[in-house]
Length: 315
Image (cartoon, rainbow, N blue to C red; front, side, top):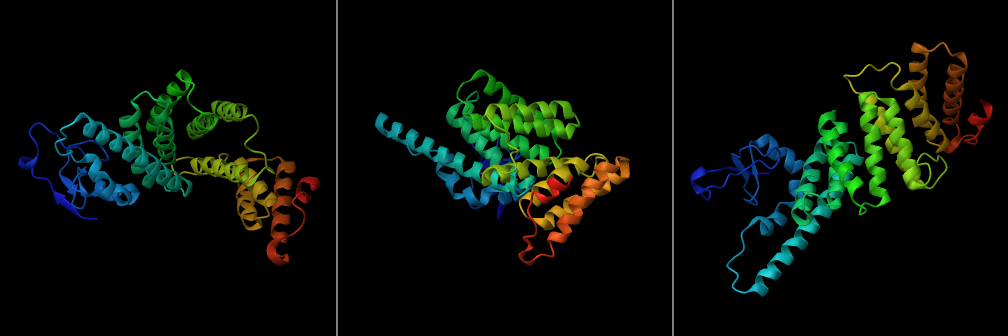
């Protein structure tokens, strides 16, 4: 990553160069593509780590003014090429941002999500349903970073578009309701969170939390629960009473998936939380039984252990 200072006198008259990350006045630029600008090196580094390294050279033909085109046919061909390049970048930046979110790298996911939103706006306009996937990526990243006001703004924009158009497929609507559920979970409004989680299940036609469904549903269920757990486990929130139920659900899922090491990890968290607040002996005994069986299963060859139904039948 290399940067160069911007010399104001070299800019076209009346053109204000803005930071790629925050839209404030830019003072440095990427010395490799020379078409991307930043307010400081810190924002350049964040953009580079998030997405710019992968699209640096791809931005040059998009952001460089074309040479003089004499005919209407040449101009039309140039416009079509520009749109195709932008569509390619929409898909690429969304894919990178989604991968980073899946890995829990919320801050690194922001630059790619921002780029995908900018290119989608350029190609499809500011009110198109094609913007919704990018808005949802930005909302999810903002929730993970604890920036709830920003997340709510992105989700409001996405919800408004979904309500006024029939273009959004069920998968997009599901992601919208899932993120709204996560947002209200982070805000501590469990009633609204449950309403949106229930609504996303209704839109999809079946429960997303089916434990013994296909592998994609299983992975998605765990991902959502981990997102809720991470939100409730953030440093600025009180822990007691916030993570016990989610930890227990994760412990149960991992036990059923035969991942006994993780089942033990989350069962211990659930037991600790329950013992610190609850006098419900039945609940404590149930968690203790799950923990005991998961720990015992770890001693079996290959960590296969007993049937995953054994704990449920014992309760």
